[in-house]
Length: 431
Image (cartoon, rainbow, N blue to C red; front, side):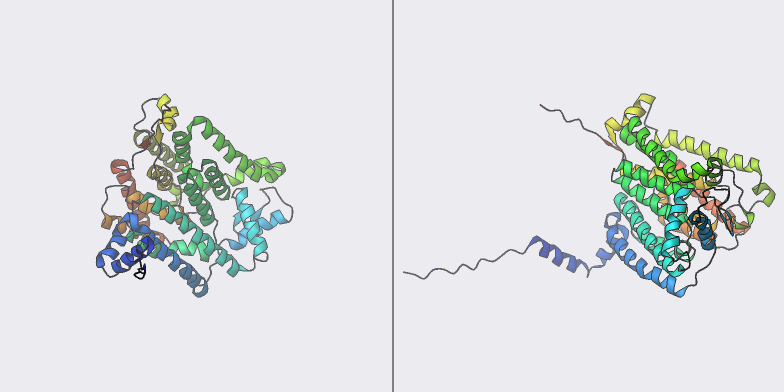
């Protein structure tokens, strides 16, 4: 009887090991690196690397660059009044003036007040803000990766040119970056179609600083096109209820004081701090008619964009109300509408202070690459904007450059905006 054959079957390599070998081979080809720098669908490689570098960069900045006191002590003084039992907004103030932010700001900085030993442990606060920066940049990267429109090499410039942004976060401890962190996270939730939670986070951002309201028109259109009128009204009510709940202790004390101080749309800004309007005399800068003209241009441009770009394919009011039944709003549309509305508001702001740069810095790349503007020109525009924001004190030239760059971006958006088309819903009929 012949001996049994030994069964030495050759195992096929697993799919994972095969992919790992292919990836390892790609590392030795220049085309691989070129692809991950140029191909928007490969952005995750650059984003992951930059995120890790940002961790060390923020630690380095905190350890090696001196903290600059601007508003932190004033913030602590303002919330200390609440700790002592004062809820009248007319009586809450710090060294730099009265409390002029909504109730969410008070709660956020109350947390800082307690975790930093009544505002004394500034170094710990800096590390908390570094964590907030990483949360924000992670949300920004998620938004951009979801859209896959901007080439990965642009993100390198986004992080390398963000000198002022890092300063606003970890060296100044302003409330603006906190509000923007919540707003970017809210956009992430909108992209994931978590409409109610996204609206709640958006409302939290508004409660910290009301500049977030610049995106409100876009949010309304997005909700209307995605979930219909009734659900939109319901989510807006959630936003309003959150604002009311946050404000309730202050409203019970002095409702007029709260509304006048926290949402003071007519507040005068100091000419000495303006970044964008140094090119005009101070008496024009302070003139109410100048402010009203800016508001009029803001509204007119917003109405034009809404009708002839965002809703250009909608012919009747009935089509608008039923749009959500027939189409899915694309990720690109959600991102573009939020960023676009915010940018229009910034173009016509009565004044931009240095910390306001964080309001739109990370949106510039998406807006520029949503037009037919050339890549090299896009980077030049971003560089010139960075130059304007890093010129201190601002000059006629730096303000002029900023307006020219803003005007170029707005012109390109008005004339050559490209957005991914919305997908048509297919009705599934049960046979």
